Image 1 (tube, rainbow, N blue to C red):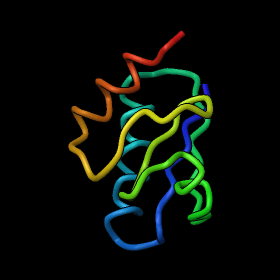
Image 2: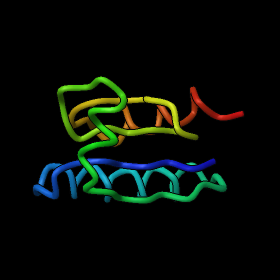
Image 3: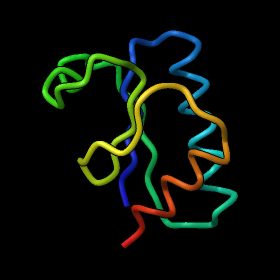
Length: 79
């Protein structure tokens, strides 16, 4: 599983990335978590909000969320 957090580099986006890494660790799943500031990827997905989470290239979550919501989203997208 590849999870990517894409944002502008602001503190909110960085926090979302850190929470996502924590969620992956807590869930003990095999996933690669990356952070990107490539805003063109957000535009490609047709989203006007950041940060966003993609899982295996598909939009999974937009905006800032709690650790529990991030865990829930990851679990819903597990193969």
